[in-house]
Image 1 (cartoon, one colour):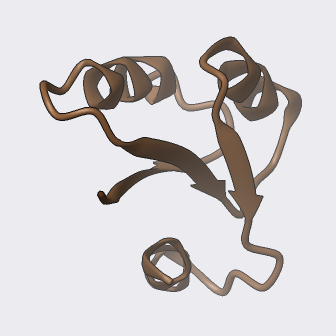
Image 2 (image 1 turned 180 degrees about the vertical axis):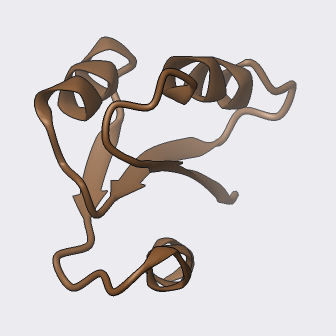
Length: 71
């Protein structure tokens, strides 16, 4: 089993499309959302698709966000 981590930044208009794409893969897996910019939009998307949100409180840029998501 593996986990897909969807990186979310602010109110990206592509977030829902990305979530749907990951959830519609033929191999069912865990999916979570990772962000350093938590907001109602991201939490609403997570709730809509029953996903957990993990927040990077110490982000210093996108590279750190990728590392956070991998960890």
